[in-house]
Image (cartoon, rainbow, N blue to C red; front, side, top):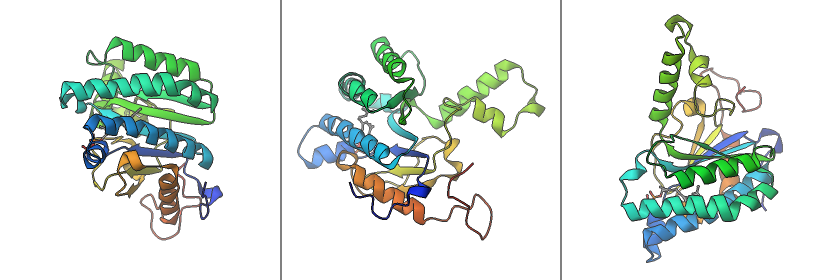
Length: 248
Ligand code: FPP
């Protein structure tokens, strides 16, 4: 573990990852795209270990977007299996022993099979009292859908429009208790946000890397944190550095 150069006093509380490049990784190896997703699960486990090494409080990963249903049915099925069988069955106990709390954000609509919902709920229940790290898996997630769902909930609560402010919206997001990400990492050399945490990443630092997600290991997470620590976070202010680099 090479934490050299990482300032232990300025560790981000919350890191979020767009795990991109699984398909390209597999194609490069002459394998079916699905093997990239299987390898991606290994990468996620190693990144979670790295998050624990660093002492992050929150790691959020984009596992399946509201748009991913448009992929070929066999790939969608495979992805659901990787999440439900590998992560939520085989890995679940390991993560539990490591003190990881597993939770999910995203829509639970008719497209999400009942057996997947059941495994998600079981994993969340088993790990709900863990405190070492909260691993939030964004599944059937879209940033715009999250804002739409928040607006619907506020409208149906009957709150007067004059009483609605940013905090009202924040309270109606999928995980209102989780602080906004300090750092968002996107792999595979793509420079897009792709509908991930649109509200939450307003002030996040973005780090892009060419590494394809299945090759991502905790060292890459440490590199991204070093890059984050070299940035000057001003939150719209000018001049002087923010005290600790962490938003309140
Ligand atoms: C993007 O790669 C990745 C995804 C759509 C899925 C992310 C899923 C995993 C990493 C699997 C494991 C996840 C969990 C939560 C166990 P892509 O297929 O779009 O790659 P490409 O851009 O190279 O085609």
